[in-house]
Picture (spheres, rainbow, N blue to C red):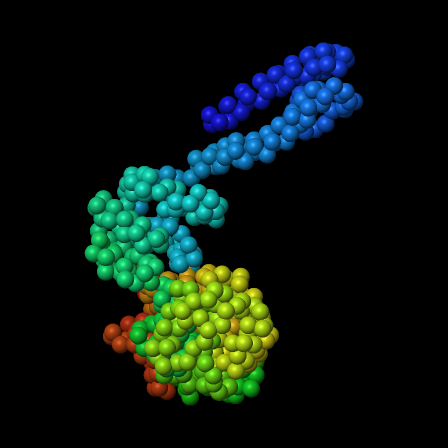
Length: 538
């Protein structure tokens, strides 16, 4: 505010001084006197760079230099005033509307720092109307979150420790900053009397023990879990062969496989394949052209080239993979990108006895081919066409999406596994040609959603949710013979009975009133399931 007031005072003064000097110069140097108002008008036009009208000719060298200096000063002021005075003024006025103290925290989850690692989780909490707040230190990001309608508090703990006033009432804490900031945040929250669960997303797994010591309930390293999931999809030697993230319990996972056009699954109806009876898995739906289509019953036809989303036990998922991608894998596993995720993927693959080849833009230990993965010459030198699998572990989502398209054009038959930062980019990777894609946000959602939401609703895939429901009108009926999927588009994938998770349902199986039913589908299909079967979330 003081800067703006100084500007408002300085501009009229500058116009007056320059107008007076111009009036004197025109009188004594040019011999063509100008009146006070004419001189004032000239000074205003020159400083604002709007022009001079008819008064645009001077003869005396000193006068010419004076006019030139004034013109340059005017241009300088235009570029100085807006970024230094005007824009900061409006930013300060806007930031003043951002909260600087926590809202009432009872029942809320507090996120410390926003980023790709928690975006899916925040969106899921908002979707189910679970209250939360975000403490963000970056003003630009805080404004963006505010514009999206998120409850955001602007501030940094190292500058204002009082920001955490009221945190003791929070339901849970999730910190997503640098590891040292995570530890400080947890310690300060505990000092204020917070006794609930505090989850930290760490960058370095070696920091897990110190964070637990300072008060964290659990510490996760999403980038390493993501690397494990990518490595498991690249190598059958790494168990589990699915993505490494349990869905309902440790025996049940979700996996995605591209139905190759030569696959015995491609083009066939579910009624012909009988996945549930013959393979022991449930096809929830398929990605085709970047759009997810739920499977709606026996007449659903598998689109050649589509990505199948399948739920089942790991050993059964491996059977689906063998059918969906019948191309024998040979050659090394090529990993493009050697950052935190890429290097961990390589480490896990080598520990499993796989032969690896690394592409990176910078030379270094462990790098086999130096160059850009977008360069077909680099792909040629790396032997991508002959590779068993290519893992794209690039740090930028836009680079990963384009690299997927480039690689798919160069090597149409190679198995392609890709990482993403943000969950909304996973469908774009599929559309570009990836066989499997997973984001850091999805990994964090898997790790924390059940802690924060319970089993009533966990987002397992972009746009796909698994919900634990009461038996409702399904009681007394067979879960697969009640035409649930045909009526609602949602699929019953498991039954929980007296603490045991049941996955196989014989012909005489019947749902009991006290059973919990695990149902997967889109939000619309789950809503329809609730209405049709009068089933409430459990």
